[in-house]
Length: 442
Ligand SMILES: Cc1ncc(COP(=O)(O)O)c(C=O)c1O
Image (tube, rainbow, N blue to C red; front, side, top):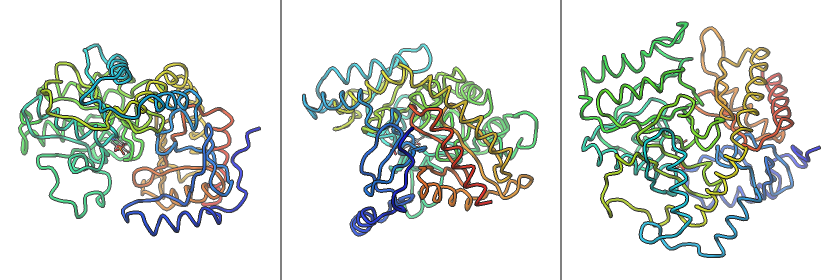
């Protein structure tokens, strides 16, 4: 029997409260802090706080702890690399780990074209570099992104982000020539939410019959950035064929397709990349989050033909740090060696369980996802589909108090994104706890 979840003192306990107090006194005011979880250690899918409470983690540090906490293979790789050298600067010098990781990522990226890889410290840095690369390669300036998108928070990346207004407020002017269009959000689509099949209205009507006719010459567009499954926006899976249609649209105008797989990649959806479900080859693919099991590493994986930027035109002091490369290579071994398959099998189990919850709780309006990237959207009324963010807030908060770590996404969705090592027992436990809380809340 697992020794979690186990609450020994209502969180935040005394030790946790002391850390929270100190943190609040000294850390910058912009942090969100979802709930007062103060971590002491983690093991597998379990996170223990400083007061000895043990939580079952169904958010994986925001879809990052792909191999769980303290996986011995990852820890050994990190320790071994750390003992050799912590840094030399991969932009200027060579080491095997960087060459090996770039080769590995180039080989496992979707599609047959040869790829080249630039390593970053984060998803944001990957987005930022991709904006530059797309402009450099096409000598075009405009960028298209989707409503609800999240691509990061640096000035360039946040200009593409369209998730919450407060992420833009006070920071303008942002990057010019960035255009947002509706995403393939079936449940709330202005064209076909109530139609039996997706009409591709968001792509054809909003891009080809509106934006490209009235506002923007498509031949000025460098790239369309898309999350193949929208993450922060609410774990939204676009309709089947939607991503392929987007690929075809890009090809019609010589626009680069940039797939931001920072959240959806590295096995989370049951395949290495969410693009693989649709057999779409983007021109540029971005990864980070789960790639290093928690060590800060990301990548821009671009077609060789797109990688035209000259030596010295872009770089990064820490990007591709040798310890992070070792963590990423170990993570990829584990993901390819079984965790991706586990994500597919456990994802189906979790999805079936959530659908059963939806049969029972009328506040669940929509359930969607692939593998262990599942979104559950809450509504006040199934007929009007009025969002119910308060239900998500209460569910997340009250689950934390009982030993289950959850996280919201979008306006009124819950995201389920446990580590890829999650087992059937953990899924039953989480579903049972969510069921019990929804019964109490509704
Ligand atoms: C799809 C996507 N892109 C980019 C980012 C930014 O990544 P980071 O926080 O590592 O800078 C995120 C983070 O949530 C993300 O989900």
